Image 1 (spheres, rainbow over the protein chains, first blue to last red):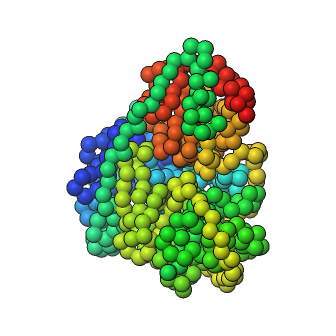
Image 2: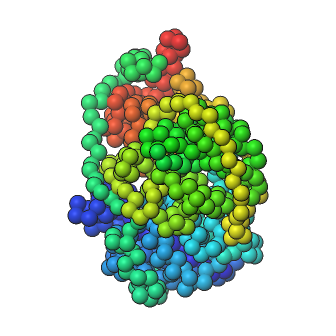
Image 3: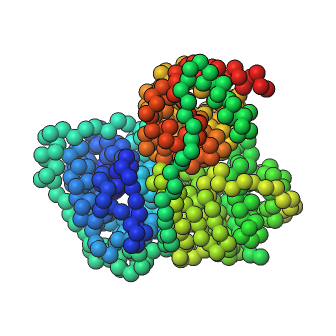
Length: 259
Length: 319
């Protein structure tokens, strides 16, 4: 099975994150940049499917030059190769334009299965799988907590607010996964060494046949007008329990009219 | 006044979700609200009363197996056709997985911008979003097409405004490519009578400090006394104390209740991402240096196994 895993480089969610003051885009320069954590689960799932059914696993990343670090990191887990869509004109692209670019790249990769994380930790927008499915005319099975592959039939169990749903589709299809689906492996030393030699193909917008005017800040379908730091919460009261902490807590709730 | 489409979010068990009433309330400030019901046969009739109560002037309904038996693609096709026909001033969805996904497909179909997790929307289409674990406030706007917006639950106070909506049944013509992801089973999981996590006015969450699954009864007890939902930190979920669908934080649900009580939760950024915009935050933790206290309006440094039972007892006394 030919599997493509979408991997996004994001600013580390454990560090202080900001938007840039000049163009309101995500500041990727000052933060530590890492693989979107959710994508590691998608990589793991791809590797498990390859181990069980054979095939090839390709990482697909759209991002600036420095996303190469994350691509090598992803490859060190075990995928075979990577495709890096990189073009200065992509800076500031909205979700709609991003889906156009990734759909064009997927169009060249002939994937049976596209795997991705359910959301990125920076934008948390969750729209990419269905945008890609809409463009490519394939099924999107989103939010998988379990994925079963049986020939060309995919079966997914997905969490809903009332319980769970079982959904099926035939390949080619896109599946997004939650972090409950597996436990991603750590790259081995051997894996890290091997990753340095694995092929990484770069593709520009011209290679994909997408016009620069359709992407980036100028081609965006939405715009950030302004942004500001939310003032830190302050003025809180902290008491140490000396036998009446529970009562004090309820007294606070009573003054706030919760009890 | 032009029409504003509100795509209804409802559950089989409890009917119209609160976020739908919030969207109708918001829509009334932008134009004339029309509710769009996408579901199984008879869904619109079952929901019409409540939708009218909150100001839906009209209800568009697309019902049946063609709509309900597949993941979101048929719903997006129906909404796209409707948008092309009625040319609304805006389309509002709930910021749930399904709401975002229908909106995603709609954005591509209409080559239209999309804004998700919106907490406020002005008449000129300027949306407010909260980014990066609640640390950054963003004002943004759709610059191509109409405002296509997903609204975060608990962002608007729902206010009734009676209307008597007529129901218009939409003709459903979905393409074969909309029927690729077939729902073969829906399994209800026991969750009791507690409110849904993202919609609850009060959320009581437990973390690693709760210690084990059995001790979560303490969290549940306090939640029930306050009429709230139960949440859990990632550490608690990963340790198997509580099911994943109740996880609050970066890789779980985002909640914004009136009152959030964190029990035995240190307040790592991954957790704060999911609860930082709560109106009032209360924390109980034995570590006085835990970062959760930076957020707390009221914090108790102490043993939750002493503090929580005492608090529960005190609430009972006052009832």
